[in-house]
Image 1 (cartoon, one colour):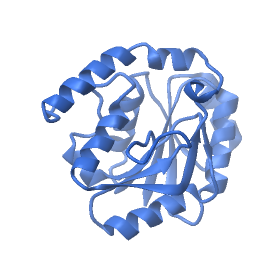
Image 2: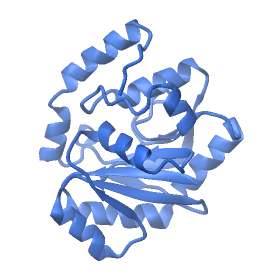
Image 3: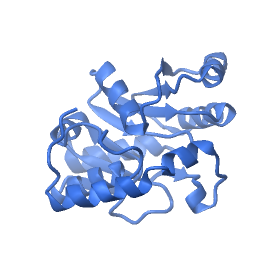
Image 4: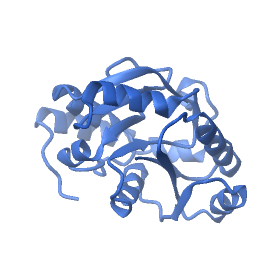
Length: 214
């Protein structure tokens, strides 16, 4: 079974719309949507009132990667994990197609399948399906980054180990201001440490991705 984890901050109405579309388009696949809500009673209330089949956790803001780590640790029963966000526009059977690509390529073994966000080339995916075993091999979610470049590190490490493929028809369009979407304070917070995150990424790549204790 797959855990699809969505860290949520702000954007209550948008988040509910996103959740509805994710649920209606995932396809024939066994999965659970988990929303990590950033101590925002408006978002938590909107999700609760929506009566949609999802799990919710009220979590103090620790950043995107920490929210993923908290959910992954809290629900250890899931062997495959997808990282989501509340600014995605999923295509038909987005998760079913990602799982099919995973099984075709890796079977029951470790691996990583990138979803197509409509923007990045084959060697990078902002959102992906990854096995817990591979994630553990890389030290878990890259909480050493504030927001940016954690996905870049995981992709590059999986590519280096020949454990990465991209599923072109598993679509999660990223409606980000970098690509013409509306900007807001949540995006601004995410960009605040981008230069620091990039410097850390370049340093870690040069050093062969040294282990960092969580």
